[in-house]
Image 1 (cartoon, rainbow, N blue to C red):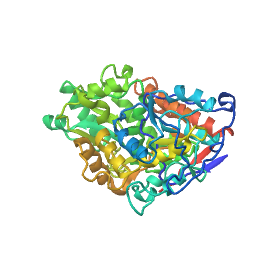
Image 2 (image 1 turned 120 degrees about the vertical axis):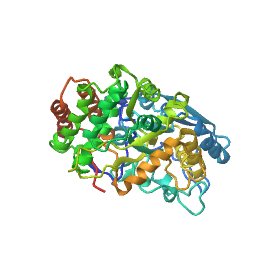
Image 3 (image 1 turned 45 degrees about the vertical axis):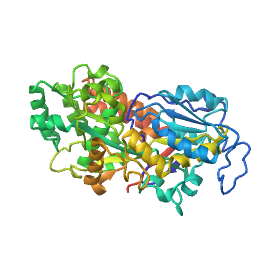
Image 4 (image 1 turned 30 degrees about the horizontal axis):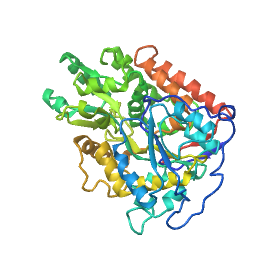
Length: 468
């Protein structure tokens, strides 16, 4: 079975974060194939387009990650202004599969889910999610005369489509970046390198100065495959990532991808990674980086908010693209990868799915998006939401990175969303690469073997990402 997706499908940029488990969605594990929607549809109206059960609560279950939940007060208020007798409940966890699998089994999943870790493609296949197209077609909360879709930034309304229906909506705009301290670089007279040869030369200077050039979220090495893939695409073009996502034969053994992996492997071989990094959690590694013990760290747009008060006020958090391989690169140095991310899902078997859709619509309002931008210090997806918002140094840096890339902002890679077993293998192989357990060819061969097995497995639904 195969499906097609639009050009800018996004992937949540946790890139191997605290949740790497997969919700077991096989029929025996879930006790059935799920339903295609609420068992008893409720009446709708212009004021209640999704059939909210107005006297029943609505539950939002969110991944407990770097963005926190302080931003959720505004969508709660907007929702309750329309449905005052429907109490809003917020719950969260860092392990959604563990918390929610039993609830899917017994038919009581949350109404709205902020997903990291659940297998969205598997949930779609079993009919356990609501088509969210009507949410985007509904009137916007606070932009008169516009639908929700018409208020979203370019590319946002195109994501989350499986076999022609939209089953997820993004919560924000993510960015794959290498982070550094502008203050630290300026103090030492260092300039961020545009090629990997220049990166290795700078790393030698950094090490001589008594600092570690790099660290990464050691227990979750998937953070590092983002820069590896970014460098590979810069060298070989966007077809590198397309081939990977589309499970093409030999995709992981493309010359540019293997060469990129080899260069990042040199960081370990030359002693340019902070001692003990492989045993660090994501928060420990990020703390050491913020304290100036390492100069570079890979991360998504949530880094600033996840650090919180740990980050010095004068850190000057600066986002940079992955370096290229050299003069023959297919893409300019400024090219990067980003886009709308964060799966927001409505469960078909939830007690009040219409309320989940309505709460989602409130979250996509200008007011709620502005609140999220200011509280989480992350990029938004709603037009005009950033106008007048308090923008941090890191947010300004991310915006500048996107602006500099222009048309060379590439889509996120989708294989981790579609095939979580492949994502796990990439994470594990990358951890082995960065500790010297395998070389670049071994890294590529190991991942390709898993990709080939998935491609040959007729029980796995296949998806395709098309070139923009």
